[in-house]
Image (tube, rainbow, N blue to C red):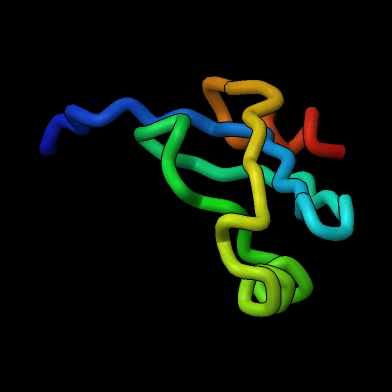
Length: 75
């Protein structure tokens, strides 16, 4: 069985549009807490296409050891 050398973080984040101040809260599992992921919701993807990535900022709200904990906090 291979050993996973990359630690997995389960991040609760907020992505905010600087143009219209709309916000998206989500959960993302990653090995890099500060990656460039902004979210995957349909409305968010449309807004990114409309305004460009530079119009958005992602703020990490919390980091959890399991997805279940992260989704609990997201609610």
